[in-house]
Image (cartoon, rainbow, N blue to C red; front, top):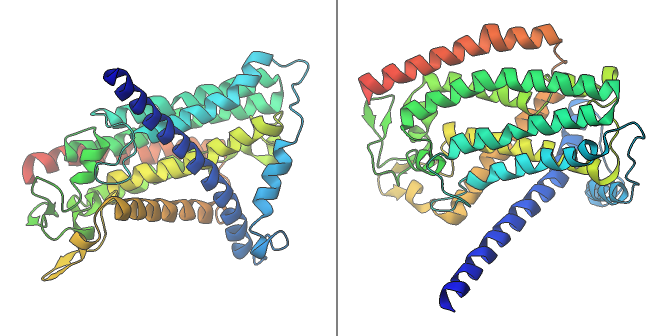
Length: 363
């Protein structure tokens, strides 16, 4: 009976973790929509939500309650199976990406030695869901939006992949938890600032990957730009161009299905930001250094601090995504592809080559 009890406890833990991550995604989406409304209002010299709740805090909650009460309408000419499944495939693909994200030292839902490979593989399924949504809707605007999204995502995965390989070549592992550990005082290997200064006992911002190998700053910028395209965020929002395509691939969706599409979009914003933090910006490690007897790095390390640091850094990148959306105009399709294939891809490939030389000569 004891082994069965152990298996039961094991499954209960994983169910609790899964529900916790789903709850986090839902709460973040609520917070993200409200924050974006306020950010856009500030940039455009408006007030944003003010009436529903204190400072308009309940406006998004009211919108969600209304959305959940909406009728689930399926167009008569739609492919009913594809149309119904697409929103859930889009969300599940993004949701499963959280499985390998480390939140603190030893705090990761599933520790995989191929974590980064798994992340890319599972999140790529979102593209299939988007194509299913566009095709299944049997709507010309939805189909155009889906085709644009697929072309965009597949194209920008190339420079994003090269940028991430640049980090993998420095870290010599695909395990996201190991990559995170290497950027802090818990690392068992010597951490060198700029390739020659040992900062293993100093920790802090100097041990982050972008300072361990400065060319990774360029790789980080490339990855961040590509992540905007992966999320269909402005200025790469041509798959959802309201002025051209009504709403894009989700034009025909209502109610809960529409809600899952937007839940996936905001979850994806946090997910790609969190991955950027883990690979480039020190992950759950503190930005504070050890200076003499003032051991700030040692004092601000642990599970609680790890969750705080990775969340603050990821939310800061989400804030930049929102800032960019309400600042820059939308790219044309030709500009989008030129940036990907003529600028970002060669730069990312150069970063990958430099990482190989850096690892060979300086580490």
